[in-house]
Length: 380
Image 1: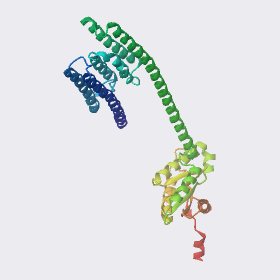
Image 2 (image 1 turned 30 degrees about the vertical axis):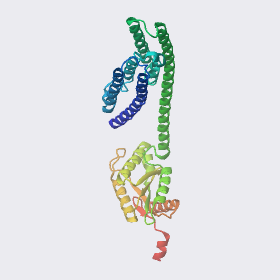
Image 3 (image 1 turned 60 degrees about the horizontal axis):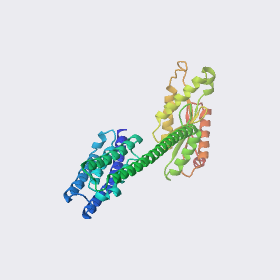
Image 4 (image 1 turned 135 degrees about the vertical axis):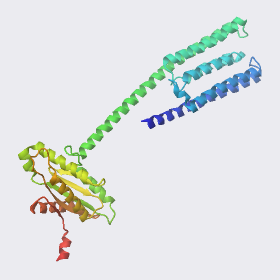
């Protein structure tokens, strides 16, 4: 969870830096405008004052850059620092407009451009507050100039500029609020869609599990075993063999009749646990139906297969189930066969079934293996 949070933090930090770099393009354009205005004689101050303005912009933006690169911004409730960046931009713009001379009317809408960067980050309340700050700063600039003496631009013209700015900022707040509501609605729908997708994935997983798992024992079912055995056969190398064993619990119907179906279920579950614990990670045990099970061993031979089933048979015969009276034990019979790459799975399962039939008719509680017909011919 911590690693995921760190990854998300790095991702969002990268996005914040991208937005910061985008804002620097506007600052760069502003620096160029200041230089051009001064060179054209429309900057009502000295080159030193213009340089101070540019220097203030570089210093403040450098501070924001260090905050993002060092992660210092993550200490704040709003890590993107959008509100603070906009306030700084508004103050710097107001400082520039104070010396913009006759260009002020053309540049006053820079305030609106600043607020555009906050449309997707600021709430409606914050956006309105930032707009009011723009109007206050520009209005304060007009008031200071009027107090100092008659303005070269005229108070009426300045008030008209303030009114135009108020109209544009009001329209921007309405539009920005609408865009933000649409974005939040889309995010909510996206989150809802993701939740539905997760639910569907979970349901599909449950359906897949139900389709491939025996609900009583938790083992794979017959369908899954057939599919997995065929898949493994296609992956076999020519010199490899799979071992298959069909297992039937002896006199299981008698257990159900004498001690009840709940006792029978407990015996089935007990065998499933024992078989699962007795196999390697790459081996497979499945419930084939009723009291019949099947085991598939990877990369084995008849000796290893027989040894494995004998161990399971012996251990199962020693289990004392709580549902059965003392001294009453369960046994199993097993039929074994080998599978080669060129074999047919159904034929091999039938061979194992024939071996199981032999084990049943030879006294039960034993393992028998299938002897290929060509071996009989060789012996004759």
